[in-house]
Image: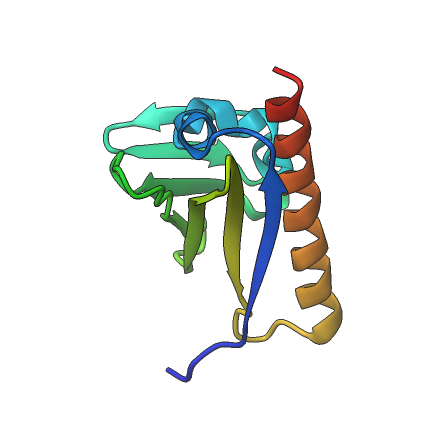
Amino acid sequence: MTVMAARIVHLSIDRNWRHVYDFVHRPENMPQWASGLASGLRQDGEDWLGDGGPIGTIRIRFAPQNAFGVIDHTVTLADGTVVENALRVVPNGDGTEIMFTLLRQPGTDDAAFEADAAHIRKDLQSLKAILETR
């Protein structure tokens, strides 16, 4: 396999990074801000299951809770495709920088890659709005 093109989509949040991590690392909170999971997640052992819409049921496995702000997760699509997602919450002064590393999947054209990045940016903006108004 070749190295995939990558883009880091990030956003500053005016909340302490530990507060942001405490909210974001909980899969049950993801439907509040991750629009692709708006229908919710349900736990299935160590994994979480979600409705991927037209792509069917998705299986997600999250990194264990940790002191480093790592919320990496592996998504397995209904067709067996596995997508590795790196999500980080890091201190930025008194606030937080949240960063999602978007990897360009094989067969993804420029327009779809840009749309994926825009979708992630929108989700991070939703997260920011939730956390900065609490």
